Image 1 (tube, protein in one colour):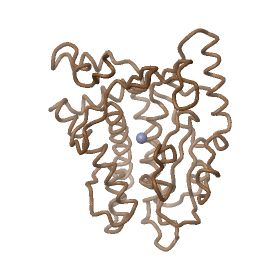
Image 2 (spheres, helix red, strand yellow; image 1 turned 135 degrees about the vertical axis):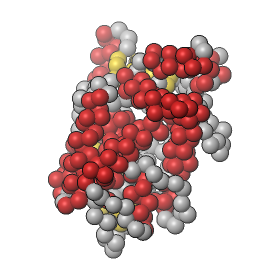
Image 3 (cartoon, protein in one colour; image 1 turned 180 degrees about the vertical axis):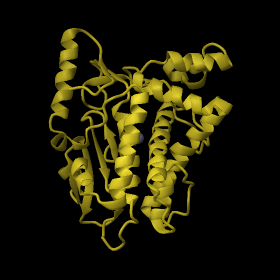
Length: 331
Ligand SMILES: [Zn+2]
């Protein structure tokens, strides 16, 4: 079982082996994600169950957004969305906390970050959480659960639809499968990636991982903004709800971090949203919207030709390499 834009390379026998290995991880994602072991304090439902349970403005905004998302992905040539039964949502906790797009799921961040929320390509599944105060003291503003879920879901649909090519042999994360191309990024068997990390504190980015992540969030928040407008949902006046609403519609700024959720949101804004925005205006100028479209299309389809010629037309031949290729990768 492969996702729509995954590709296997090698001999028929090697492809068979990769497919078998991935299938083993993907057949029963709840088991291979080891949810009970990794998050003993959390109770998970699948997203289809959560969606069936929504009501009022939450249902309205989510349903409107799902339709907009289908149209958007269809325009990008994609007809399949991440199956909702493959999205595991933390819906209750014995440790309180606050759920939603910027919930880290664990009280502390693990060093390898494999327990952070989001899409897991090995299992082709996602682990996220339902928005709101898990102590149940402060109910979420009407529509917030639906809007935050829409943000998370469309974002992870982008991950699900990202081009990935696999090769057998070198080990990549302990699965015995090497992911040689991921969207518009490349990785050698040695592990060196095409683009290097940005310097600490950088306000822009030339890192392809950050660029793809930022592009996904632009798409997810655009869909959410349109859904919110369509259903007439307005921004809650205060609390985390206020910032979470602005975050879900792509209008958030870093704010004083009075809660872990906001701290995590600030980290994402400073590490992903803001640098991607600056990158788009630096490289795209007045055509930054067009550049975003070209990036998303290349990331899902795995074909860089249009992106490369878009850059070449403006900056001369070889601009993709000049902008993004690290010296270690070139060597
Ligand atoms: Zn992401």
